[in-house]
Image 1 (cartoon, rainbow, N blue to C red):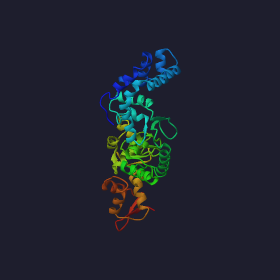
Image 2: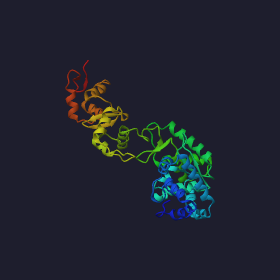
Image 3: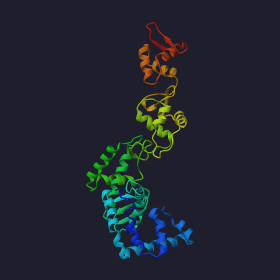
Image 4: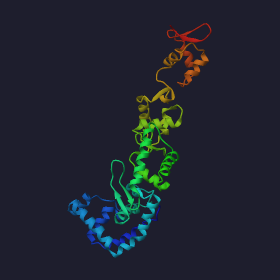
Length: 344
């Protein structure tokens, strides 16, 4: 939900009047209100010359005072906005999403939303655990059922996800079916929200989803990024072109030489021509053209056209290169009918 600039500021300023000056200053710094950046308990403690625990006590006391103050009513409109966000996201929203522009376009509102969540009687913070990131849940959300359903879905995806990624339509289509089969009441916004808080699921730079164990979904470095780009191309490419096609989630620079070095070292890639690389899983095999010819002729004599066609499925080379390699009389022999075979 996009909001106008500083949508919550005026209401928050009203409720902060219920606090002493020092306490108000602590709250403003703690949550980064009115254009500031959120500060840790330790950082505020250093500035105030007190312990982090004392800062925590001041914070908790301030939140209590605000809830009990008459000015608390001024937050009604802001709470309605937050409540609507929960409706649109199925009752659960990852804490990190409140700090991103996909919920609030203004930085002030991103910080203020977390302050409002602490004050809202309908919002409950769920701590990070082994399966889920820190998240906020509406008190009416059926958290246990939803998390159980998602855990079952994760198990299914993991079982089939080696080198696998799904388009957004495929992925959420399957998740939607899972939800429907379980008779759990939710919506499309909720499904995306649940995926965002699940540690076992991820999205790559191409907008595809899957299990984090898949190196296509969760790349481990530039070699995996190159693998995804080449796999997307579906055909051999020069290493410079592979570098151009790489997409990274963090937007970091892609260096051509780094990509080339990874292609050379990784056995998933096969050099099939001058600077051209293909994936081994496509049927290409490492080695020189001579080695490819030997493998082909082990199956029996073949004419030049058959040999060229067979080599073309494994290497990007000209016919003249094939013919030149066949002239190696220590390895290859042309028999009377014009076909080639291996020297005995």
